[in-house]
Image (cartoon, rainbow, N blue to C red; front, side, top):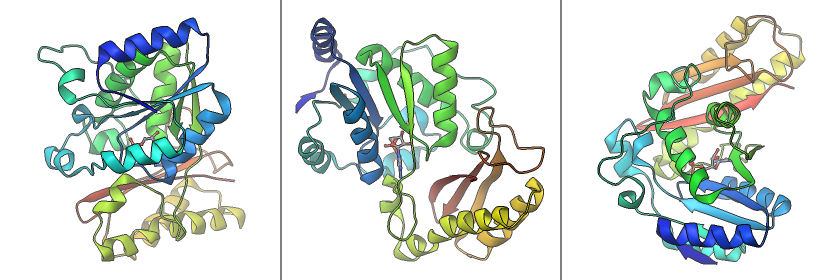
Length: 281
Ligand code: AMP
């Protein structure tokens, strides 16, 4: 695996790869890699000749500085893991390389970026879309892989790619969970043991919601209330967002519940905000 730290080298490598006419799959991450990231990489390897992973903790998408400072960094372990997975290239630039003094441009997918999680984390999705555009411009992938776990992010990126005519296919990869149902997340490492236990309530509530739907519940409001009461049973869980959405528009579902609608949870345990997501079947 070749590790690339700067823009000049990544541009040079991409130029060569384009001459060779290989297909490039790109997996952007913030590191502290886990099995969720690995699922994206494996999917990329299935579909592409070359896989490029990036690790970059993007300060522009953190609306809370302490959250940025606390974000786990495990670069040496990550490098070993990526080499073992036979990833071709790792791009891990410094913050100064990506955000030099004087940067003035932002990219924002309006309407989708300031609702739901964007309401709780103002500016977060603007930071995400701006870095993703920069990385797309540097890496020029044919395919880019994003987790369904970050469902709002995935929807925003798909919309952005359509709106700005990027010639890139965005592939959504289903959520990967630990044995007890908690979705893999780099932030899980920041949970205290009792908070990690408490986090199980998220998937339990999603499974219970599916059960209600299967047994005939069809009211969006009723299911939302059901989820709220279920999660509130766990005293350590502080709800930030519970919503049931139309998948493409991210609008709160108005009509009766239907398969394909998405339950989105954003819940805080101590100082750690966790996301979960479930597509009704
Ligand atoms: P992050 O490093 O947290 O920015 O995540 C990088 C990518 O991995 C994003 O596209 C996430 O949606 C995806 N991802 C993170 N956790 C999971 C998971 N448990 N299952 C599937 N994809 C995930």
